Length: 419
Ligand SMILES: Cc1ncc(COP(=O)(O)O)c(C=O)c1O
Image (cartoon, rainbow, N blue to C red; front, side):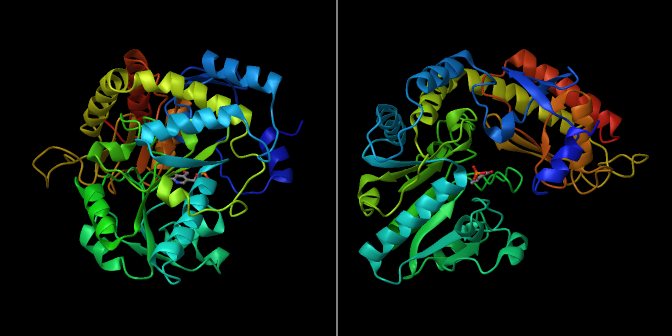
């Protein structure tokens, strides 16, 4: 009989390089594969499953909405859409309006469109540029790919929409120098996710706010991966007490039910006119019901639970980092340093969102480490060649964190990465 990977190879685009596993069921922080093997899911569908798999509240809300009214299109009013927008505006701090879509890329696409509309109206016909950062990931549509600061991803898909420039992430002076009369907006991730959970220097977002306010351009914060409580606050930008002009969300917002949101201050949102933007599915009643139920689950976890569990995960990862070994395992890995840590290794992140960077000296790649973890019943992914990403559901317990760390340690030992 033909295997699922073989059947897939025959009929699906070869855009994903997947490990040989088929997950068939999830509950809370656990997944089960087609062979009945159990896993701890410390990736959460790439920072999506914040409420855990099959959370009863989300299941009930989605089922009830689908059984009542699944879709009407955006030609008509729907209550769940307004209710969700009210909740998000409240979280943003009021005086804002939301555009609902189906994904992160779409949320950023809407942000770019509103920035251009607003820039033209408020700063002049030329003010359409978006300054983004090197290493940033903003999506895979043509405009969000152009905003993405990974130049190697661009050539196969050129020509890309013009009007995007990139500056080093975390460098406020470079940002200041890049903002000019042709700029409509600065687009930033508060912590760069796909670049390997890169945390900028403290005060960077505040500096970006000052620079954009002085120049009279928009500050747009991509919270697609960092939002919905991932870093311990509802939005990561709230750690720096900054109010952006535009914030984008997706991923965890609907617990895996596709939904994206672009929140803009009322003044910016009102640059748009009927017909300027739209979507058939975006913000449909089922997606909104999923998001409302997810908010109900996630919001009470912030502050107490997430902080406590996050501290345990961070400590455990630091401890594991202290046990990492380099290629020359016969020699003490930290001969050249005085802290006993493998040079180049690092734990980066905040809240329940971390990268364990194995460093350049690691005897195996992050991909090999992630495969070893899968073999030990732990789902994590290689976010870069040298770093593993952990983004467990926010409902994860301290016991599950300990169990996950034990599985990770066993996998790293097996891969020869850890003492
Ligand atoms: C920060 C950020 N922005 C945008 C996106 C794109 O989201 P989507 O894959 O839902 O289009 C991602 C996805 O990883 C992301 O991490």
